[in-house]
Length: 268
Image (cartoon, rainbow, N blue to C red; front, side):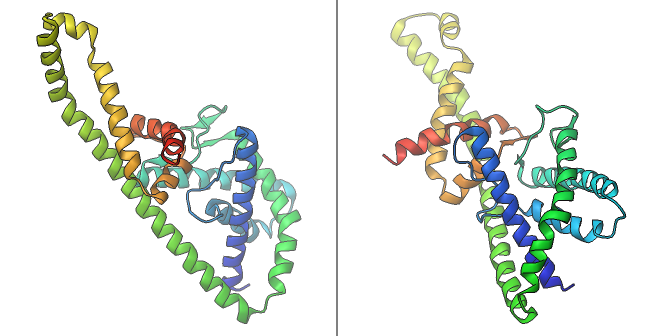
């Protein structure tokens, strides 16, 4: 078994995983949902899981051993991937918090059981056909094909990482802008209104709360930030589920929520 063949398997299973995720989520939400954190039509976690399934479970004695290995292996893979991407980019691409028996929303028993069953399907139902396809391709053609795919995949990873880092910088700077301006602008707003209406400061603060003023500033800064984002940053924001364990979690979630409305108006 050659390393180039294994990499081609990885890419094929990543594409199949993307197709499955996109169809499932699109049907679930009744709208097109382009899944995956990368630009291309592939979900690498499926490729890694399927290749490990083939390499590790191919020699196991029975279906039960394959199921258990895939179930536990998928849990480790999902948890470690979720943890790593969250630490690196502060974003999550799946969240099982609303499902039973979950661990911090990263993994849950129902999905792990499903991946255990998927491991059986891949090993006994799908991989024999994948192997037949790659066996038809001479090794002299597999090597340049794998190198080309690897170059595209590496470039995609680099562009996506750069976009996610830039997105986090934008969110951080946007929140800093809100926090730095809110005190000064709020005091000026109160003073101006006080002079115009000849009302007491305490009465005005009761009518116009700090939370209401902060909401106005947040919406203004949110629209300004969205207008400066390029296509890849917008795609990265749209593909993520939420931002966690960071002080701009709320801002990121709200920006994602308002993204379709803002771009709908922008494109008119």
